[in-house]
Length: 76
Image (cartoon, rainbow, N blue to C red):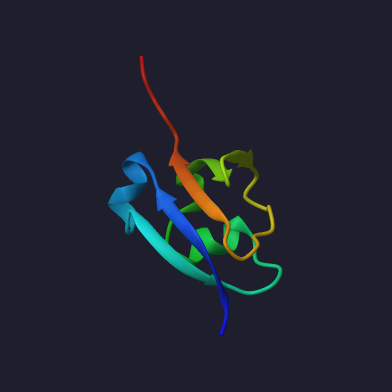
């Protein structure tokens, strides 16, 4: 049995995967690993939040983490 993290896709990223998912993780997995497992293009993910704090894509995950992935935001 593996441990899990809860992942929420925000904004346009919802077009590329489920808005919320519970993803099994193994020791040493990073946010980048989860992004690939979801089938997302890592370049589409601009901001990573883990448990309410901004983090990098190479941040290691721990069981029970709550991950939000946010896209690039354009405007003008």
